[in-house]
Image (cartoon, rainbow, N blue to C red; front, side, top):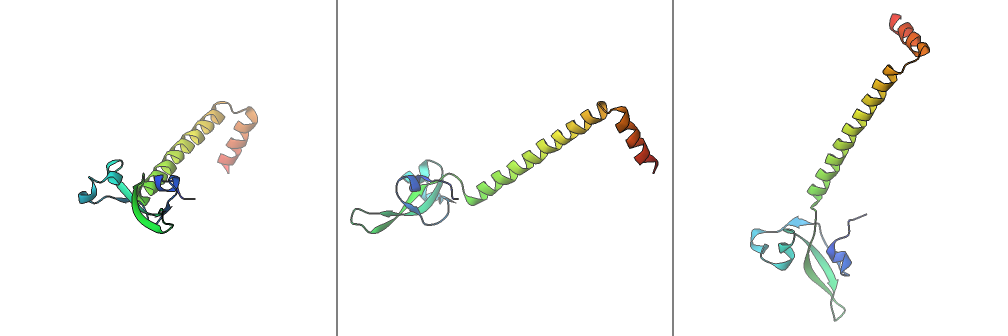
Length: 107
C-alpha cells in the first residue's frame, strides 16, 4: 500500500513518485516544506483533471534505506537476544543437560 501523501489527503491522485526538487523550484510553495515534490492530478472546478505539484515526505530511495536500516537493527536485536538466551542456558544447565553435552563432544 502506498503511503498517504498530502496530495491524497486533499483529494488528488499521485501521478509519479516523490523526487527531490530542482534548485530553481526550491522557492515554490510545494518545495519549501520538505524539499521534495510529487506530481499529482486533481479534479478542477470544471470537472477536468488538472496537473499540479504537492509536497511529499520520502523518495523511494529514502524509503528503501529506512527499510534496510530497520532490518539491520532487528538483526542486531535478534542476535543479542539469541546470545542472551544461550548464555542463560549455559549458566542454568541441569546435570542432565551437562551430561548430554559431554556425550556429544566425545563423539
